[in-house]
Amino acid sequence: MEKSIFYVNEEDSGARLDQYLASEVSTSSRSFIQKNIKDRNVKVNDKVRKPSYLVQEDDVVVMELSEPVELDIIAEDIPLDIIYEDEDVIVINKGKDMVVHPAPGNYTGTLVNALLFHCRDNLSTINGIRRPGIVHRIDKNTTGILVVAKNDRAHNSLSAQFKDHSITREYSMIVLGNPKEDSYTVDAPIGRNPKDRLKMAVVEGGRRAVTHFKVEKRYNGHSLLKATLETGRTHQIRVHSLYKGHPLLGDDLYYGGSFRFKTQGPVLHAGRLGFIHPSSGEYVEFNSELPQYFSDILSKLTET
Image (cartoon, rainbow, N blue to C red; front, side, top):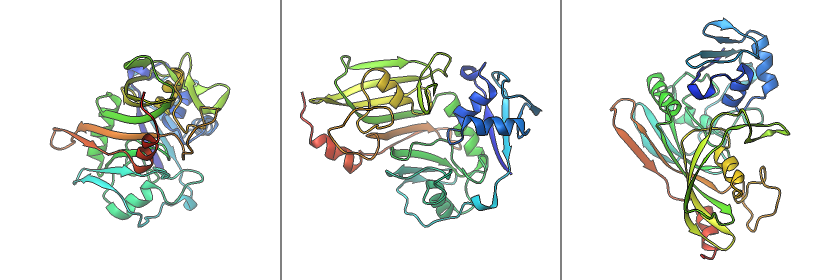
């Protein structure tokens, strides 16, 4: 059985159980979530609930699913760009075009497959066999820093920090246009786009989402920004940037227009990650330089 445990915070209080889980488990559809709730595979505080149950702060939601044999995850000798590693955590600089954990259509070649080979059995078990050690993720075509837990104690510590929004997460990005302000904050709720379930959007009744933006440089038709996440919703930076009228360069999912440069997905890089170390209790921070493709695009732009 694969077990996933979720702790409801104040921001999620009042959401439907199926909506809450669909937002937490972004690789699964809401219909898949609803089916498993109805099949009694989901419990809230050890009780079976309906999909319409409204979760409350401090609820403990446990989703326990049978894992088909064909989904067994194998270790693969895939090179990793390791920034830091000790007995508790491993900090990875993820390259472009790598999926973080196995999901339909991507059962091999993922970061998890690589971690299983590198770490062997030294990964936390909290998120089951498909996501061992995975505390958070970034999209397939987003580059940059991830922290992975090597034991359950470290996983719980990091998860609590993510839920408390005390983790430092800073991204570099190239957007279309030139924002008027040098720095600004977007505080707008995010949920599934009612017109397209593959997308997220700023919607009434969505989960609170806060992103802080800072303009680093303005170019002719583009801008280099840094975005700091206060919350961590699916596609949060992409949605909030679009909401302000500045879609990410290369973001074909959210922007229907054409781009000056051909890219493999949005030009977005997780360049800084900081957290309290699970064992030492000290704040640690890691940085990653812009990938070559990102720097190449900047070199072709003209500053204004």
